[in-house]
Length: 205
Length: 224
Figure (cartoon, chains in turn orange, green):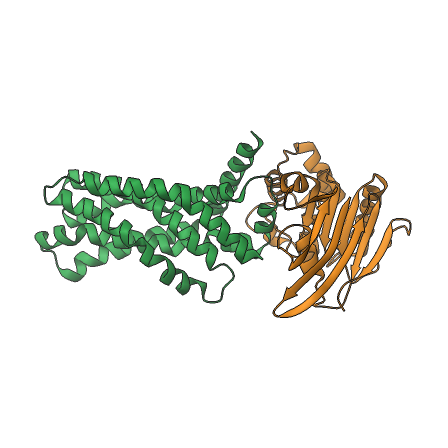
């Protein structure tokens, strides 16, 4: 369970949010909404422990994430604005490397099936520099089929995805939620997720 | 155990990336060869003069070509978002930085040290001096990568990072230059180079312990 208490964040001398509070329970997806520059990405980075808030506290199962960092990152999958794809590595190598750096050793079979899910299998031996924006996003999202993490923090996961990939991601999110996972994401689209799971929250003033 | 695996994979990835883009590696080495070779052409082929300037020239050229590749140490990972993933990996950031510095040294510092004796022949250095030169570079170039990592981390994402990095890091390279070139010069004049080499070794021991800590702290600041 992720709890956020009285979070405040300041960027460039301007308060983005103040006294921001949320609780995320298993099987719940929080969709953060807000205009451009309202601090959605800053909030996600704070939740992931990448930057520290002006004040306030983020707790994972009741413990401050600064104190249980090792435990927290082992449950966390954060996909940021940049897809963390290396142009000079092949599609397959990219996926393998990003899993390995997160501490997993995926088998050749599981890499294959994850790439098959996201429709990149036929391109698995091409260097990532030839991929389109949408394909890069798919490659970054392939980790969702490989890593068994409870909390997903996704910054604009739907950007550049086509209709088919959008539906694919929505089904994956629902499967994760049905299995008791937690998701917090930002997007300017209206994801088609079963209402039982979905909670919409506004950021900024 | 898992930590060691992740660090090995990171080292493997960094080296693989350099070999996929060999032009960066070759241009650094080429700069070293050209810069060193210009001096005999510029100052004339007087053997006594060349012997006198040789150690200094080789060391300054090594310093500058090590500088060239520094800005790439973290910049690519920062730009494409990999650095965020590294911060979230289960390994302490200090070790991540240490491994990245090791990878940087293996593909930039080590080739310089191995190439240097060949270039030293142009300056009429004796076999013993060439040995001391290689040894001093083997001790000194890891220090250049370690100190440079602090500068590279501090200037991450800053406009005009290249010049700022040089201004920040070159003054810190001065002790390395003095002891390194000094050891070779001492050997060339028939004195014992052990003093300079020991000091380089001591600096390296300090650098290995403290530089990754400082660079990791700087990285955390620049990624905020």
